[in-house]
Image (tube, rainbow, N blue to C red):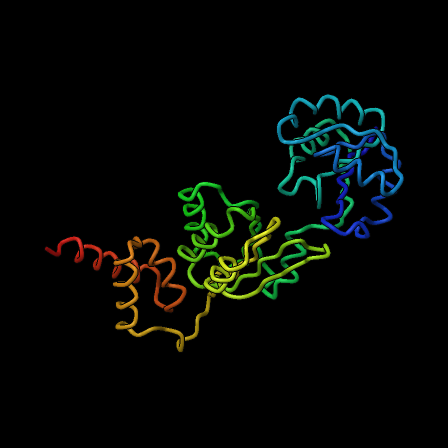
Length: 283
C-alpha cells in the first residue's frame, strides 16, 4: 500500500528543494502536480523522470480515482506550483480520500510563503491567522475584515498585484492604522519585504507599481493599548466629524478609530452614529 507524500517545492530559489524531497520525487510511482508544465521544469532541473498527472482546482474531484488507483500500487507525491501543497492549493480532498482508504499521508516540509513572510515581518509570531487570498469583491472583503477587527493575532493574507491598492484601502478603513509587512518575490533575486504602517503602505504602493504576488502580514489588535495613547474626546469627535463628512459609515469609523484612539469600539460607534444622525437631520 502506497503512501501519499505532500512535497513542498521551491517558492523561488531552486536550492530550497531538500535532498529528501528530491529523493521522494524520484522514487514515487506518480507525481500529482497542480501544473504539469511548472513541475516538469523542476524535474528537468534535478534530472528526475517520474511520471506526472495533473491535479488542480477544476479536476481535483474527477482525478481522485486515478490517484487512488496509483496509491494502491505504490507511493504518490503531491506538489503545487510552489510551496506546500494543500495550503491554499488543491490537496485537502485528496488527503481526506487517501486517509479514508487507509493510505498513510506524510508531509515533506519545505518552503512556504506565508511562514517565510511571517518570520521575516518583525511582527509577533506566537499566534497568527492565515486566511489565504482576500475576497475579490469589496463588500465581501470588508465583511471578512469586520470580523477580524478585534482579533489579537497577527493576520496573514495573500493578494494579487492588481488588487493590492484596493485591499490596502479596505484594510486601513476597517482595521485602522496597523503595522504591516508586504512581501513579494520571496527567495528570488528581487526579493522585497516592505515594512511600515498601513497608511504608509498606501502611499508607497501608489508611487511604486505593485509587481508579483504579495503576502501581507498585519499586526493584530493590541489587547493592551497604553493610556498615553488615548485621545481626548475633542480629538475623537473631530476625527469622527471628518470621517462622517467623507462618507465613512459608523462601522468603518469605529473599526479604524478604536485602534488609533484607544477608545472602546462600542463607544466610538455610538458617537459616530450620533454624529451621522445629526448630519442627516441638519437642514
